[in-house]
Length: 290
Image (cartoon, rainbow, N blue to C red; front, side):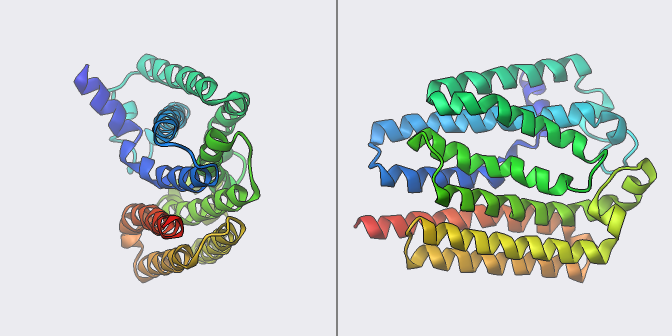
């Protein structure tokens, strides 16, 4: 059983939860301080949000591996995935997806009424991404929207509503993710073209992809600046936006220098970005509270 759980964790790349996890925490921090959420209520909300994020992401990744299996078998980069090489069979994968979807809906019900109402639409968006690459190169942005749902979920859990600042934060996440997914997809240009899959690199080429990615990251920074302004955060949070800009510039430079740096740019710089931004927001709110 432990070996099976380890394989499932490997299948859904559980460590990548940090990408969206940091932004749901940012939303929780800002929203929680706005309503002076107590310690007990705050910890309960944090636990429920963590579970909701885990179940939603497990469903999304498991479903993606399920419906993309026929492509993953042919792609040298993905042939060693547990869903492809037989270590996880299709029945287990289907049960995994259904179980995580049901758990997500159940946790959403425990959070509040709005979270429960949004749970099924959220699952539909997460599942829909897996089919986008078959007919639209907008799949990169749809993936961004999927991760952008995380801060929306966080603020809904605390406030039971969706304020404007959370929308700016979410759209910033969407364009940030789209930007780095565009870079990541440069690894599969020839495969996507051969299989008739739509991606910006496959349709428009590498140079256009680099410029679209840069534009997405510029928009992400502008949207995060709008979030800081709309949420009435202080100078430390503004500094955090500046540091995020520096990280994204470094990421773009790494890929421009050599496409072999794509894994490093994808996993390392993006992993740090959310943690850094969260740290600056927490410091900013801590100083304001003092």
